[in-house]
View (cartoon, rainbow, N blue to C red):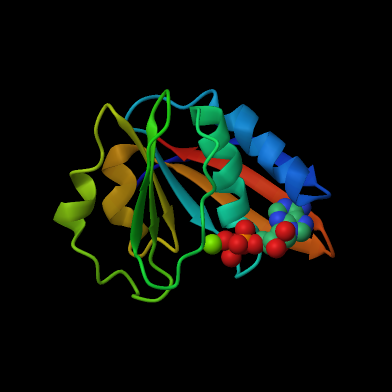
Amino acid sequence: MGRLKILNILKTKSPEETKKQAFDFSLTLKPADMILLSGEIGAGKTTFLNGVLKGLGSDKRVISSSFSLMSVYKAERLNLIHFDFYRINGKFDFEELIEYVNENNIVAIEWPYDIEKYFMFKPYSVEIKMIKNDEREIKIKKYE
Ligand SMILES: Nc1ncnc2c1ncn2[C@@H]1O[C@H](COP(=O)(O)OP(=O)(O)O)[C@@H](O)[C@H]1O
Ligand SMILES: [Mg+2]
């Protein structure tokens, strides 16, 4: 079992603020880091990843796609590989996923399934909770 270390607990009051916090967080990311995102629909997981992508050096926008499980966003410092397992309950080939964990990439997973299998990568965990209206609580942790 991985040990979970709390790195930061933040409150934001707008999507812009969430993106700014995610931008700052992204500057600490290293090659082959993994981010597991949790929180209900509309919490702000994809919004957070937009801030991460900007921090990695891309002006592209991360989208919530209803048809693709995986998107590659090339960026200046490290590419962002975005998985969203919401619709498939983890029926994605794990072997395929781990090929993306390499020195060129950050791998981010919304709705990770069976998170124990990711512990070997010592992933970050980003938990976003809706407080009210545009207020969110963001907990950033790391499995060690
Ligand atoms: N503080 C906030 N942080 C992030 N998103 C927010 C915030 N306040 C309002 N929102 C809105 O909530 C929605 C979050 O959507 P999204 O990031 O796609 O969520 P998820 O990926 O968790 O389903 C967006 O419409 C965003 O504009
Ligand atoms: Mg999303």
